[in-house]
Image (cartoon, rainbow, N blue to C red; front, side, top):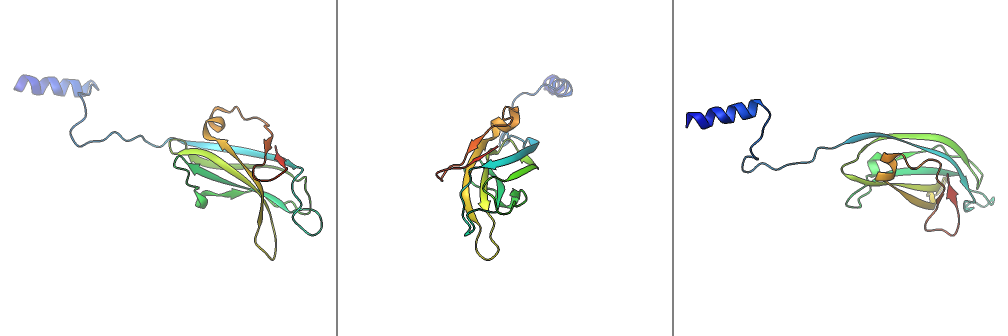
Length: 151
C-alpha cells in the first residue's frame, strides 16, 4: 500500500498523470487573439438616400460557433457621408475567443439622422481565415443585395 502511494507521489512530481479523477471534466480553455481588420474602401454600394448616395459605415460583430451574434462586442468604422464609394482606411481592433468564435460578420450600413439605419449588405469572414493571416486585401462581395463590394 505504501509503495503504491509513493509511486503515485513520484509520478505526480514528475508531471505524469494517471487519468482524470471521477467527476472531473476536461474543459477547453479559451484562446484569446488580438485581431485587426482594415477596411480600406467600399465600391458600388447601393444609394439609399434621396440625394442618390448613402452615408456608409461598417459594423463588425463576432459570431459564435452556435451562430449567435455577440452584439455587445460590435464595433464600427466612421461614417463617410454622401457617397457610394467610401474610403474608410480604418483599422478595427478587438480581442476574440478563438475557441468559441466561428466568424466575424461585417455589415455595411447607411447612417440616417432621423430614421433607422439601413443595411447595404453584409459578408462573413471565417475565424480560421482571420487567425492564419490569409486574408490580405481581399475583396468581399456584399450578400443580400444586388451590388456592392468592400476591400
